[in-house]
Length: 258
Image 1 (tube, one colour):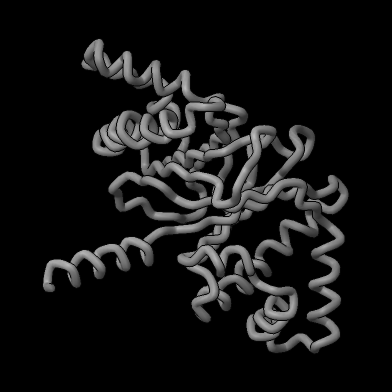
Image 2: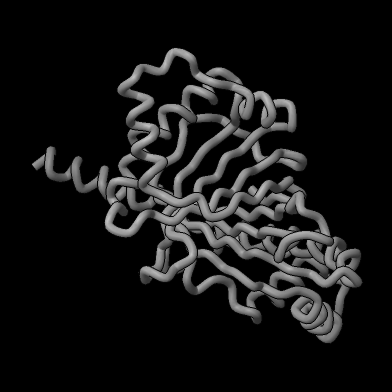
């Protein structure tokens, strides 16, 4: 009986620890970039209220390195949840307005609603990803302004979905953990889309690679493990063949709620 209870407790604990993340890729017109930069600071205060209310587990706002003149997006907003239902429900507009009132008590109801509507008109959300974390390295990485991230969108080769996930968890995770232990990286995590996808989906998975600064980032790019065995190299190559790396977004953390 104790064994059964222990197993049930462990399963429940793992479920509670599973992390879900929503990635919002944001596009802002050039003539509104300055206004939006100011607005993201307001967002931080609003999401801080949602965090304090246990609606979310955290929130990040990242600036992409492509700048205003390149690419389809300028920013990535990441919201963390501990529950898939909370993730799918998100934070309703009216709840956002109420959190804005708490964060800015000097603003009237009319002013808050005008501010909220202005924010909706100055940006587009061309892409949103609902993701579930499957694996992550053991580390003490600190999220703070200025850290770097590489968001790598992946698509598993058709018919090799399981092979790809096994390769990321059993082959690539230990490699990234080794880099972290050597001080060449800050954090790595592997995510799968939390929603059912068809064969025409542009991506199925995402890896997040975090670095404390550019020095660590470039040292990691230059590092090559000369001690890999032939079997390890074969496993890496087989893993690479099971997925298509669709796109890499390099970003800098500008705002964070933890």
